[in-house]
Amino acid sequence: MLSNGAPRGVSEEQAALRRVATIVARGVPYEQLFAQVVEEVGRLLGVEYAELGRYEPDGALVLVAGWSDTAGHLPVGSRWQLQGENLMTVVFETARPARIDDYQSASGALGRAAREKGVRSAVATPILVEGDLWGVMVAGSNLEEPLPADTATRLASFTELLSMAIANAESRAHLTRLAEEQAALRRVATLVAAGTPPEELFMAVTIEIGKLLPVQYSYMGRYEPDGMLTVVSSWGSVGNHFRTGARGKVGGWNLVTRVFETGRSARVDDLTDVTGELGIAARESGFRSAVGTPILVEGSLWGVVIAGSTMEQPMPPDTEARFASFIELLAMAIANAEGRVALAASRARIVAAGDESRRRIERDLHDGAQQRLVHAVIVLKLALAELPDGEQDVRELVTEALHNAEQANSELRELAHGILPAALTRGGLRAGVEGILSRLSLPVNVDLRVERLPDGIEATAYFVISEALTNVVKHAEASAAEVTASVQDGMLRLEVRDDGIGGARGGHGTGLGGLEDRVAALDGQFLVESPTGGGTRVLVLLPLAGNGQTLGESLR
Image 1 (cartoon, rainbow, N blue to C red):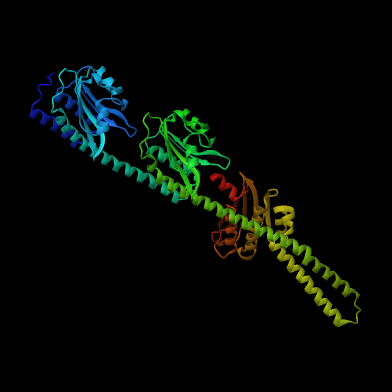
Image 2 (cartoon, one colour):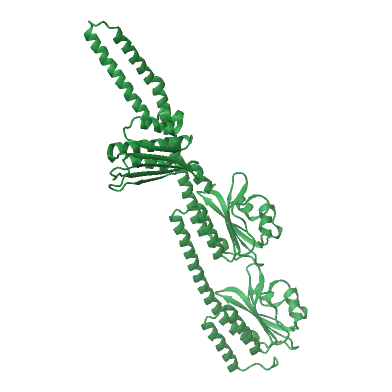
């Protein structure tokens, strides 16, 4: 090895710089570039050690490359706190070149480590990337005489090349990261636009965030009115992670509680001291640092997304900002879904209110107007019977009045049937259908395997059967029809078939179209199959739980 007093020639230095410039131009991976540079520096300057470190946002230093021709360098990947009197700390504090000619007085963990390696003097230059301090290059010697005065200048030639290479690489990395983020956002936006069910959307967003960020865990939670957090989706690349459906109490010092209390993003860079049920669970799952971002739906706090890392170093400072766009899309989707739930629930309430009004009108007609008409018919019949035969003019008038009263009573009964028949209210769907069939001349095979149903479901099923059979009689030219109903997996399945000429059409303004709207208001499905010459089939599926409850449970 050459002594410090015998530096390599200018030509050899230029050759070393050309070799470094060549690998910079080739765009080789960071690790290969850093290793090559520190070796070139070490051999060119004739020192025992050359090391390259990167400064972290939390003020620590991570060794990214090292070279030694003697007892070895500090371990690559090792993490050091910047404190005491040593070159790496001085450069961090000043962002300027520095030297120490006698390391016996050096302090701090890095100073002690250098002394243990036998370093007696060292020179360091900062690595500035686009004006910001990125890291430091250090050359150290075990010889008694200090390193030459021009060592820092010669070292700077290499750090300038490194700065350019790092800037280019980070620019490429930024573009790649941006492209990945945009692709992930497009995938999520596509799901939102397609009206994907909430649970599927939650899972997709959680996975996209987990894979996009340098984390090992991500999960989404919903704040509940009872002070609990419910995990609605979770992802983990290693070990155990929060289980979807799990619940934990909000409280203590942890991310979930901080976001809940402030409604703002937060981070915890060291979970050692977290408290509360959710904080302890995160630490036991392997979290060492984590960030959390609130989900605000129309200005109100709905939930939180947590991303956690098992790595020793905290997550980058831009982590929260990187998944803010996902949260905005998610909040919009939740607002839309809850709006659909509210609209469907409102429609269901309107249908229920209409049915209740029909029941009240039916009762009023039956107990009021119909009873008075029946009484009038009886009185007129008695009066007609008491009239003497010679009172022909009076008899004709009474007979006419009796006919009108009977006709009015018959029409009123038909009107009451069209509103909501008493048989349906009192005896259920089976009794209601029997009332429909009593007024039809068409043979109808009926198979109703149902008991009493919720009022709204029962009334809707009745109107579907009534309208479908009325259409059969009026338009289908059928010789027979069939009505079946059963309950399967919490759904009422109702079907009306005929063997007529087909060609039935639904849509706005038609009887079937009105039924389709009514069925949709109860979160049901309505299908009409009516090929020309092939008869007509009306199929209806109605969830017995009702629309508001079924969809609401997926969001609450």
